[in-house]
Length: 422
Image (tube, rainbow, N blue to C red; front, side, top):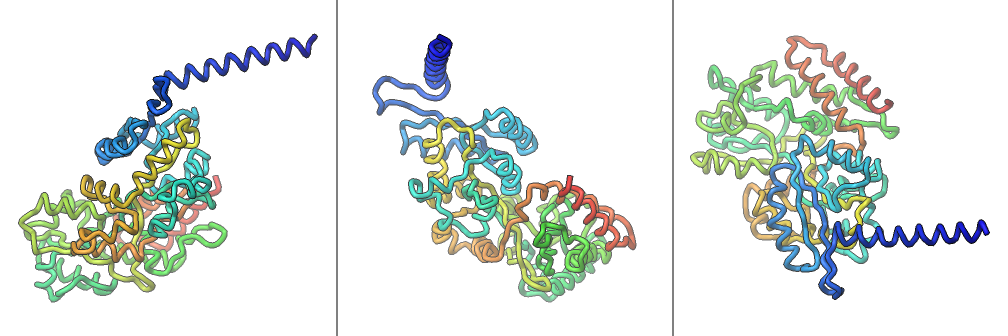
């Protein structure tokens, strides 16, 4: 009797859940007219920052190819996106597809919030890793799980005023740290209020990038930080030397383009591809007077950082197939070139880089060359916090005359260890 009652109860529960599921499915995400060909699936896509406002233009192209899938885009400001994602992970209710900053991948992959795409690669070959630069694929991989498809990439290069460098004896960009220091000092010697190199103290990847150029591995094989070792400390000393000898401005109160234009208060800086268009728009009078170059080499190499954004499928999506189709569409070379046209973002697709636009433009060619030696920041979920901590440590260095850099890096290394071990 009890068995029969349990069976009856289970049957009622199953029926109830089935009805709820049908109602939930119809009400939330799809409209079914009775004809399977008319069923429309709606996917939710979360984009980040100002650029996300351009995603709907790309989504329209996707919808034209896939009339049974509707895309709803939500643009989140970068400063609130992280918390919103955390909430989505905790509730298991979020978007179907989400744009992920490359440095966020480890944290959210570790939380099992991003779907491992490995089982889907045969059905969606456009997602395969071989379509993208290896460093870019690395940013979307966490502990052997492929959780983020490279979407757009950026790397850092040197921007410089060709006319002003020529005046101090440089017909081309500096190629080594030593040349970079030399030309910076000569440019600073032009007079009061003139500098050589605008070193961005708020750029969290800069020190780690330079440390790699100086031979640092950043972490040992066991994951312990190496920030108080000679290679890293040497890079910090190199950065600080620009402030010590007056060739880099401190608290100048103007942005990179303001310092770049006119008499060139700071005629060299390191930045990403978005600055090309900004200079062309905001300082058109500089046409023919500036250029980009791959980074000067340190003791070991001229590695740059590799960043950008990936597209991930949320682990808890109810619209897996439509989501994968959308991500594959965003990974197409032609889609990424259209995205570059809209936002000046560089494509992650290797095939896209064969396009004449990227092959013939002098500035884009430099970025393509730098990408050959660009690698992402370490794929550890604590790295974001460690990098922020470094900015505080470096501020103590450059604001304190005669600072004991080794001691500051010893303290920073201990802080990094505590972040990792907490």
